[in-house]
Image (tube, rainbow, N blue to C red):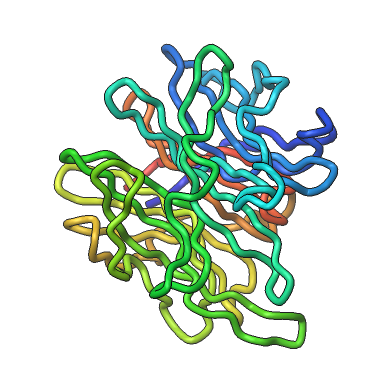
Amino acid sequence: MRWEKLGWIFCADRHFDWMYSHAMIPIAEKSDGDLYRIYFSSRDKFNRGHGAYLEIDMRNPTEVIRVHDKPVLEPGALGCFDDSGALPNSIVMVDGQKLLFYTGINLGVTVKIRNSIGLAEWNELTHRFERCFEGPVIDRTRDFPHFVATPEVIYEDARFRAWFTSCVFWEPHSDGPRHYYRLEYAESKDGITWERNGTVAVDFQDEFEYALGVPRVIRDGDVYKMWFCSRATADCPTYRIRYAISNDGVKWVRHDDDIGIDVSPSGWDSQMICYPFVFDHRGIRYMLYNGNDYGKTGFGIAMLTSA
């Protein structure tokens, strides 16, 4: 593959009190013709994640047409699993319902985070995603004692299929505890109750890799393709975008050398590229992605020029 970077699109820069910084984990949703709504997560003055969106025209995708001035998803009630942030991750259309699977952020004490996965539904009257439950739909359990996050969900053959970050352990380090998380796979009949048996979708490639997140899955014919990001302790301490393929969506083979996109020599994405979202428009494949500092510099767009 080869991706041509088309340019930077947006970063929150004190637009509103609730959209004070960052523009993380972009998600593209077609509105009409060439118009797209791009959902993302911004941070408020207290560093809490909120759901937001803006609009672009794919004929000139680096120009923002409009930034919606109200959050479409806010942090949950005090003490709930998402009281420190609610980050949109995956939108799924099922029987006319627009469902959102999102990451709920909890801050920890002995470790920095303890995240879970929540479910919300779009309400056209309120123009926001309304929580289906005050609690998470995927969380740590007696068999899986650490956090989960960043789900990618598709509805296929009358079942929900999810790929998501799954933390397997924390390890003490001189700069604080370090989380080790890989990508897990699970299924559900209703999107609420999930059958988790510990199926590993994508594992660590070596002893240096320790963080895999934000998987994005597309089915091309009989082949499933996944883009995600990871970081390691040796040659790549900051996130890079990775690639894997599968015949069934369960067992994946990595092809990281074929990804065809990397950091730029300078600028907003010169230190890190992460949190991809891949979509097709008018026969062309595009990728939204974040740059430096986990989305603090915002997100941009690239176009696939060869496969």
